[in-house]
Length: 333
Image (cartoon, rainbow, N blue to C red; front, top):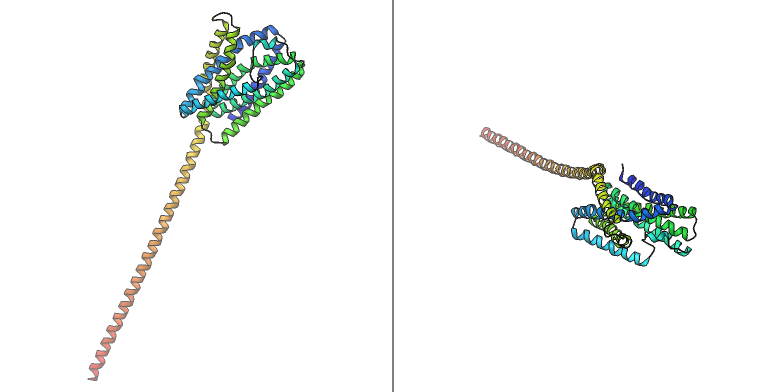
């Protein structure tokens, strides 16, 4: 399947699936609470394994390790500053289902959802820019992260006075920014020659920030046992992410690698044809030069033959004239 088509499908699925699960579970407060409680550490595990097992190692293989780490650090600082400026940018705490809210807070969370989805889209598009397998891994990591987030936001907006119908419509509109962001990142990355190690590092930094800045502190705050089920779901997320990564790169990247290889071969063939044409042109020029030399030689030979002919004619004429003159003198005598 074409990478761009796969990107579109993954973007739509990421946005719609998260909202669908939230709509189904929001009326079941107990189940929603459990999903947030255990889905949050699971998402952290998937995000971390995607960053440390897939993105960072492949980025270092692609180019300079310094560039990869610089891209990751820049992404972490960038999202830290965004979250400092927009408090509603990133949240999925269990208390979102319980604390009372006013309508202003509901609108702020909705605006934050628009922005958050756009950032998710940029990360997803950048991941597909790397290869299809990495894009699939990123999509699964974002879905795992967004489901608890959407449930929390749905609860916030309900308590802010919005109806379910209003929430669904507005969150569907917010999901379109994910698609727009992913297509924008993919198209710009395809047109502009961006060093891929920065892309690897940037997406990895985004995933690391999501996991470490809020998800894991939430586990520390809510888990009562020293090593409880939430810690277990964190490791389950790591295992799940590693399994999906292995599958994605084993099966999905096969076709993508062939496509890239084919494109590379076409480029090489094009360069080879240009080189051959250049050689043929040089050869033709050389042959023309040789023909010119042959022409000069021919003209020279013709000139020499003409000179020899003139010389022979002159000598013969002189000799005949001399003989005739001598014969006439002899007769006169």
